[in-house]
Image 1 (tube, rainbow, N blue to C red):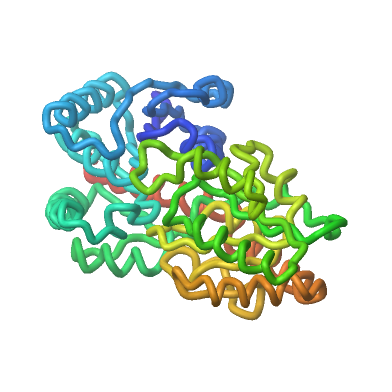
Image 2 (image 1 turned 30 degrees about the horizontal axis):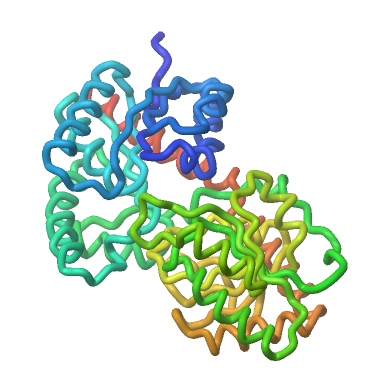
Length: 380
């Protein structure tokens, strides 16, 4: 009997590795053969070492040149004909559109579309982006409502917005999960309190707001350290430049640690996790990992972020782009070690109850199985 094959389509290999490689491993352990289509930059060996087949296919995240986009779509279609997957799992907006369209033309009978946050496009008020949003809505309605398609979202706000957009309620699976067992809460490290933000270095992740809050607190005499972990994202128009990050580091208001791969070790050096984001998040991996590490959380009352926090239980929610509120929340936690401890214990419990990767993977694999069984019944 032919082994059933799942094909994951995601634009960047680093994103697949940080967010979806554990799910792909779980699919393989469940008996599926797994292939990944992505732009291979630095993580191809990691993907292959997991026993996954890999196809290198570069698709621009932000590009809108019609000729280049058509060529990208043709390459996707050729890849589907080559792999002949039983199920295609597309991740993020372009793969959702191109992958679902190509699947329809190639007769792929089961498609899962993961909308991991609505992203830059749905958070922008620029005229061009509003026009593209309107076109995207029409494409979503045409492609995502077929009976052989399932749409997954990570938070209730995106679920409601997509339901209004396409007329069908997507399935809600909260985030890509976190391997809670990899994070061991430790006693608070000695020395000054460390406030940490780990993400791509984007303005709309709240990087500028944390820097502004750090300046205010240092002017008030705080000894706390403020740490940014992550690299710029030159392909994103909201990226903070390396020059700016280095200037802040030299100024002394923050420390920029750059990209770090060992997040359990990195988070073990922190006392507070802070993500003052106004990006259209799905459910930020950093907040899930920080919760698993037993840290108190400070984030915004914004789509995707609020789902990780019980206000007054494991952290604080602040309004977006509100430096004063951010300073107040951080100041309270910096000054109160017992509050940090209580919030951290609750964070760990929430990670175990809601965001553990085993739960998330099991829920996703059930979606796969349901779609494949429906396809088989339809063919019988």
